[in-house]
Image (cartoon, rainbow, N blue to C red):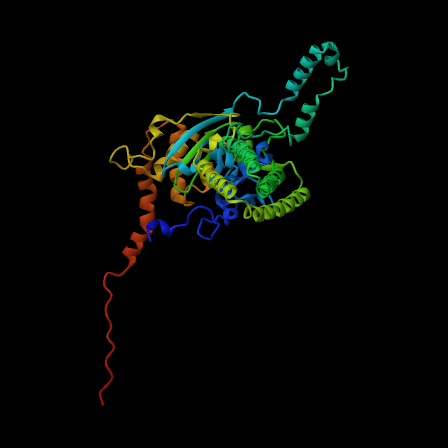
Length: 454
């Protein structure tokens, strides 16, 4: 008996060949990868394309998330005193706070970029109406006087697009048109069509029904989960303090973001809402239908002929690898954040706060030095106490007042670490030294006389 006899040969016809009855199992493997991509995958219209996707049961959930995932980090308003214990999803894509090394410091300026992602202002809407009326032969004087004639009716496509829009008054972060997930959705849709055509040439009706069923299941569940991310917006445009925020992670890194209140409300203070195109009741009905179709398709996949089982099994293996590989791509490739312009304005002497500059107390990286850089840039210490960045003791309060005074005076070369050792370090050791001084130097030993011997 040769080594080749140790393995199956060809198809499973005489119980000596390969068996692919578990190809249906490949259809439900890869749930962890699909769960990590579920929100980004269902935020684009490509989620409704009928196609085969790995682990479609990852989208079959009894309830849908109402917010995007968050990161644990303290977000404190420098001027307005607000405090949020988590960092929202989209600002963490703009500046991943988890990637900051310990004691790092960075200053960013974030502003709105001029593009079409922001909702139009009333003035812009009036200008657009005037332009449209002019092109249709309408007198502009009638518009300015308030006697606006009825504008021409929208086209059918524009009407449908407006009805699909969730909330045009709020800022949004749409998915990238050519994101990796969108490309995978389109390619898997075309590949599914190819598999159905191949099954037609092989006269495998079971494979055709199985592919059609599982494709309809993914399309129905994708439509039920289709959503759009919407950011918070300021309702009133009254004068408010600057919206600068300080972000601190658990490793002692600080990020100062200089921005106005509009950007602060959208990215940091407000909540990122998930607004769906389908209501909750209809969602549950569609999920029930999708679950039934998925179960039927799993049974049918196990009854296809050998050639189609091999083709479908290989397709799922490739798709699982593709979705796993897409998780390694930077998240900037998935979301269109071109509405925000990010500039790095970190001072040169603080850019390497996490690195050792010289072998001195001030030159070594430390939490105190990074905290001083943040106070030096903000020229305020209220956010330090509000966010719990420093201990709440009299000694630390004294050091913070000295730091604020030197920052206001422009003394950038103030020896923050040495002063902290003088003010806080000595004070912390004083109670211990006092206790040592008060303790007796010699404690006599008292012996208990032994009992009398009888």
